[in-house]
Amino acid sequence: MYENDRAAEMYDLLYEDKKDYRSEAGQVARLIRAHRPDAAALLDVACGTGIHLQAFAELFAHVEGVDLAEPMLAMAARRLPGVPLHAGDMRSFRPERSFDAAVCMFSSIAYMRSAADLDRAVATLAAAVVPGGVVLVEPWWFPETFLDGYVAGHALTRDGRTITRVSHSTREGGMTRMELHYVLADARGVEHRSEVDMLTLFTREQYEEAFSRAGVKAEYVESEGKGPGFFVGVRG
Image 1 (cartoon, rainbow, N blue to C red):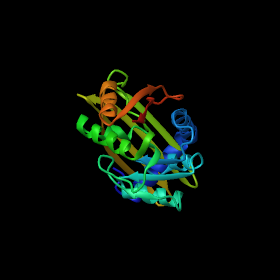
Image 2: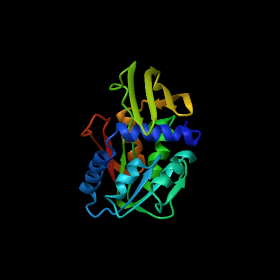
Image 3: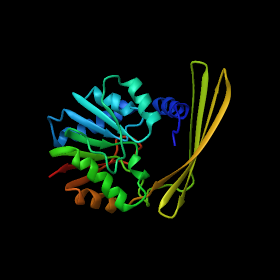
Image 4: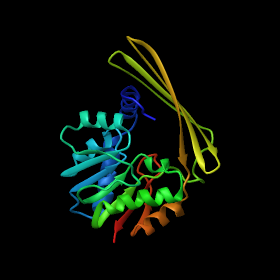
């Protein structure tokens, strides 16, 4: 997934056009400051190409990002010169400093394959914040809210390029199988790439238990938009 700069670029252009990252970051900042009004430092785990992180940088005095995919981090570095970015796995990354808040956005947590992996990821977030710090996770859909057979698409034309993305999502046991196809057309020709992402349909109870085991009492909050909501908690 996002194995090269070209794939990361297609992802970046499409989602920047499709999602209201600034609005989402604003809701997240409000949720954080409802628990920690003076929050000034934020860590974005699975920051991708840094679009959410760019919006967070306008709302917090200090931000840093972590991601496993080097091409995504390279794009984030171009977008956010001077912002500390780190290559790391959300199950094991340990920052050099502590933060007032640690977040994991855009359902990236669902790439964890098991409840044990979920526990490790939430523990990583909790370990990154100071006592009284806020941990916020945007989950994937729950088993009962996932729409089997869901189809989505988006197209963008800009600067002599057209990019399209279509997806088809089905349930396979406790997982979502999301098949995605991207087509890019520009002066060089037409390029097609595809991928299959597997996202775990963790239950609400599994998320809550992972937070509890990490020493964080979490509550589930509905999203202001169409997203799956947020788990928000404070480290004891």
